[in-house]
Image (cartoon, rainbow, N blue to C red; front, side, top):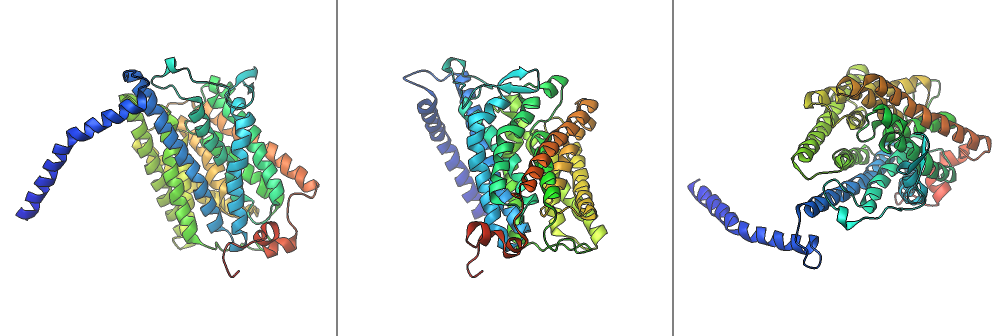
Length: 443
């Protein structure tokens, strides 16, 4: 033991001796990074660099959530539709980012043209960065767009799991462009771009309503118009088995990691004591709500189903994350536990409700994102400091906005015969029918 302690002391001293060198190297790096042509490093420039670098990291984490969604949806569905699900999640990002760059961003953050309902700011990223304005809380337009585009991709891809196994790829891609370029940006303007809900004081910190309820109720509309998968309801409850709970579980952990870009990243400014304290509170609240959602969903499902169903637990974790997203900046740790726990109960109830109504949502997209998105908005008025009446209003407006428009779109495509694949194609699997390939060798 004495030899171990002596060695530990030597290691500590070596680190202390290295500290001045490390500090020197950091200053050299900072000088090379922040200063231009001999310009001295200012506090304002350092704050500007910290804020923008951290937002870039947060944007990458949110983009990483696309992988999580792809794995959750693929794992919870049949293997014959794996390529199809991976394709849709990939194209949600590709098509969505382009349309969000062309028009979506400037609909969301443009100048109001119809009161607080609509905005427009031209095409592309028109804003430029004036170096003289660099300072705390100032975001470069390019990284600001990247962060917002990652959110748009999240809203779009929620629907993929709800309509899995039966929607034509061409129709899905049209939907993806519509939600990324129009439906989501308008919804975002209402709260985050200075629109009418913002003027009323509606609080949705990172998007329980703006992102998740919009995507969740879009998924509900798609599932309802499409109808259930063949064999899903044969006069009784008939769950179609997930082909890989392993992949689905890994996907949930990827989403959990990505959520630390989603929620803490929405602080937008990270330098300074107040921002650091806020960001850390948001991160801890996010963690506690996710874990409480997992625990309470498992306990309720165990009681109802007489077994600890991992599927409910995985969706419970996501439900807790969705529930805390609107209010993570304004509630205590104890409140975060309560919000996440209630979300875990709601997601189980929502999944059972869909079963009773014979609405086929293979991954639970509506219970997780739609129902718990509403709960997140209302919870900001119950546990936080937001006005409860305004929170209830906003928590109703967003679901109605998304559901009505996309129910109409999917109904139109159904009338045109362009919504659902044929029964024979569905039985064969969309991987072969739509893509001419399989996910696993030997299939």
